[in-house]
Length: 395
Ligand code: GLY
Figure 1 (cartoon, protein in one colour):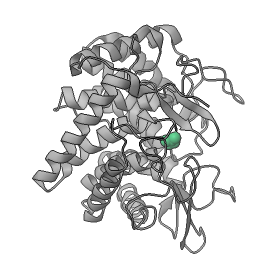
Figure 2 (cartoon, helix red, strand yellow; figure 1 turned 180 degrees about the vertical axis):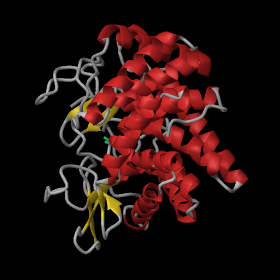
Figure 3 (cartoon, helix red, strand yellow; figure 1 turned 60 degrees about the vertical axis):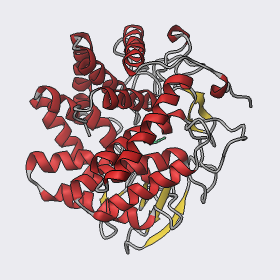
Figure 4 (cartoon, rainbow, N blue to C red; figure 1 turned 30 degrees about the vertical axis):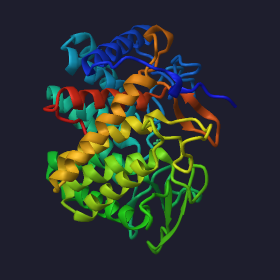
């Protein structure tokens, strides 16, 4: 396989505001092109198409784990521009997410956190939408059904009786905890916050390895609660360090430290960040797995870079050591500058992605060297964080 090399592009320095204008113009074009249809997880040849029909869900319908990243982009575009076209499009998605949870369509996943935080929770935070609040609480209750006793973890994938997935969680789950944290804040029900505290402590103990890298996934014995073994699903091999997983670790441990006050999570976020930064190639955008380094012809995963920019900026906010906080923020700015200069389309009309050169799942050859909905979302969130430091996150 050959991949287009992002590193050969040379672009003049572009200001954050110019980058925002280009990104929002692409969001506007994608909204006009796709209308209410949700795009697929990734582009095909750099173009987003409606997600394929599956089972009872028609083409362009709301299924899978990534549809809310379109909604999140619309909320960000509304906040950045004040243009109500984006709010109306976001609200149409939010109503559809309400239908999805009430009709129980494709809910057997921990990704309810990604899905409902960027849709219904964001709607409630930004506009006070009470229907969205009720729908988000319903989604949080579905997520709580995945909490396994005595292990104290939320099962990531599949039906709870599926023997292949039983007792398994994954590092990405850290990003699904904010739905439960929000539900705890809204209702005062400590069941939600206890689940966050126990799940994140289990990940800190077992998914983070002694060398500060992370397993993608980890199994617990569902009957005894004993930790069993790490394994990968999207990484190069079980003991490798999947780049996006490490990026989820930076952002997820930092955010969950802020709400639990568990100092081990701050240490975990720092360790994830240091490992990630130590394994970056010269341009600051990782290969899809951190076993690859400069000189490799493996594809990059720009989505991991966008996530880690947000994660480092979050870590800088919660960091208790001022010098370290300054360092996290500086590294985030450098990586973002590289994304802007080398990973955005040279001509915006040439591609539907806000950033190019991401990888969804290389072992399964899905979405390799394409734009991704989450890469685009976190790139826009990163721009928002840098351009509007007072911005309040949806998580
Ligand atoms: N949460 C799935 C992924 O990052 O690919």
